Length: 287
Image 1 (cartoon, rainbow, N blue to C red):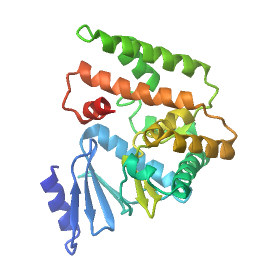
Image 2: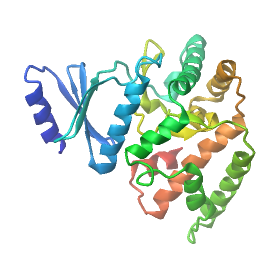
Image 3: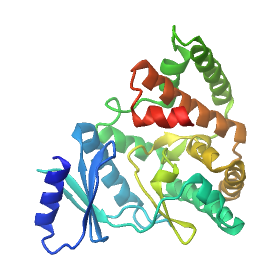
Image 4: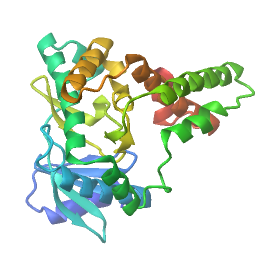
């Protein structure tokens, strides 16, 4: 279904709706909102369809177990395939806007992220996460462990016309791999995409966490990698709060290695494919 078809379909389902909004720029779904009460998600293709089923099962397992609101499944349909969730209130903020919050609220942000990481693993163990991914056809279809991605894209990178990029890729892979094999961090369940675009804010605090399609297994350093972009103070505060909750010490150097390695791998992959107008290429180039 295209965006016009989605809007028409949702209007038929909700004939008394006053405001139907569309979000048509996501990779996986076309999203329609109805009167800031309901969210309809229509997957683009088979991988997005499988991700949606995976997320629905995940959300049901997490219901009532996460302090910060996450999508609440109301309906799941086939022919056509779509998912209905409750509308979650909040707005997005930029890294600069988050850094401008009073310190009491940036400290609260760190606590909220650490608490979410802790609660996620209290609610669902890594074995269950991987079983759900396998049951929904994601393993082997769209999944590739980060270690395999880094090896393929960085360790074996060849850029004959960009020797500087090839050298950078090899060096960054070596740095990440050295830290990775020495890491004592346990394997945990991770959201694996905790950037600000997947967080909503109200009154200077996180009001919702979105998009669990990449939720998988990994380490706390891997999970915290997006915090590098909001600043070292909030990253270190999150590390401290996470240690208080779990007794696990996370090395800041390991977190930043994850940050730069994932970004460089994404950049190199788009360069290899000559996808220089792709949003991922533009984002990683600017970062």
